[in-house]
Image (cartoon, rainbow over all chains, first blue to last red; front, top):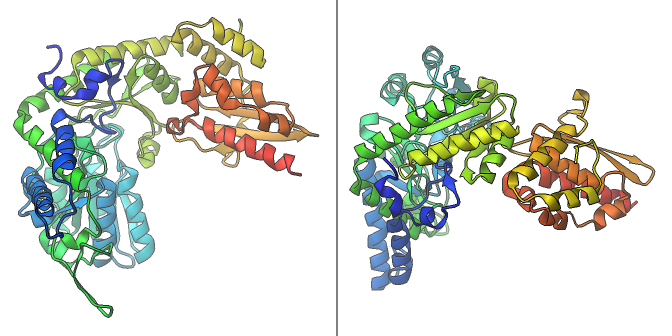
Amino acid sequence: MTEPAWRSDFPLLANRRDMVYLDNAATTQKPKAVLDALARYYRGTNANVHRGAHRLSDEATAAFEAARETLARRINARSSREVLWTRGTTEAINLVAAAHGPLAVGDGDRILITEMEHHSNIVPWQQLCQRTGAVLKAARVLPSGEIDRDDFAAKLEEQPRIVSISHVSNALGTVNDLSSLVPSAKAVGATVVVDGAQAVAHFDIDVQALGCDFYAFSGHKMYGPTGIGVLYGREELLEEMPPWQSGGEMIERVRIEETTYATLPFKFEAGTPDISGAIGLAAAVDYLDDLDGEAIEAHEASLLAYASASLNQVEGLRIVGTARAKGPVVSFLLDGSHPHDVGTLLDQQGVAVRTGHHCAMPLMDALGVAGTVRASFSLYNSLEDIDKLSGAVRTARTML
Amino acid sequence: MPATAAHSLDDIRSTFGFFDAWQDKYAFLIDIGKALPPLPEADRTEDNLVRGCQSQVWLVPQFDGDTLHLTIDSDAHIVRGLIAIVLAAYDDRPPRQILDFDIEGLFDDLDLIGHLSPTRGNGLRAMVAEIRSIAQEHAAL
């Protein structure tokens, strides 16, 4: 197989033939369908939503709310009232920590995460702990990059009130087995939050089947625009949560003495929302829905297998993160070489990767490394891209 | 040209003038980086650390009269090579001369300006800002 059929859907890849883009875990490129949806919205529909006594506002509102329905369908939420627009995963987790956190934890209560979390699934909980006196615990990660299930089970016995775990590790690609982790956390009565940032581009998500209470993800990592993301929340929990930001859009009636709040989901969407972002994200979902999901998953799995095999043949190269279940991510180190040096030399050869701690410093500490080089693949990458990667790595190795 | 511990600015400019291929340029950067005298482990302290997200830089400034002597190190070879260039421009100079020197122009001429960009997170940009602020403080005395 040469280039995957989907590659031609992405204008940037045609415009930048000088680059092999392997930084997809940071952000994906956007298909033409998304770019067109953004342009169409601004050229023909742009108006503020949920107000305005004119047809343009009606059309913008209809498109904006249809986008919410599209996202609700994509993740199998019970209703679009459970789909809140946020700026991305980070804001979504902050929303849960700020608005649900104080209802769930008090002084001395436990919050459980894992050592493999992205900083955005660590720091909001630390801040919640500072405000409430709760205690943050992290389940250990094994050298393979998998959660130490014994340690996770032991920490569940402390009856954490909140358990927040990533679906897929951004730094290593480990896919966590939510089908057993979530039920075990629910069994001790915890609120279960899932950071889905690295999963949504690669796997079909069914929040009801997962059984989690919250699921957070970003649009830009699944072929949508930057600046838009989603927090799925179970309706009963969202109903009892107070608003976390306030202003316009989120109110029903304001008197100087007292305000009554809007119903879901608007209670959590103060101010003018990212209308074009929501519409662009829905276009990305429509684009994915039209593709054969199983074929994409198989293609990405073959990229991962080929990259792992090719890179393993480079002398002195060690793949960091060897979990049995992985998303299309390969993190690696060249013996004696700093990841930043490797990344710089790959960039000189037109191969775009990420280097460093990947915003997961506790994970790097747990694995005893300062950082790694991370190549992350997407549906439009080809086996040739991976040949260029391993060739460039070999060149870098001879230079360092 | 063999890599030695200290290169003059003229050396560096003329050497870079000979390079056509990126490999030659980066091989030279790596060479002069490797030749840079390492900072003693005892000086690799939190206090001397200049924040960089992808690589780390340690900086020990010392005034000898009106001359600023700099010892700088990094954990990455290419960053050490870039440091050797910064040292050629800044080391053992009076603060006024440091402040007047167009470092961005130099990196632009050498086609290395990307390494001074904030996205690289290699600590180089923060290091240059730090040296300039030390020079500024001293010049104001």
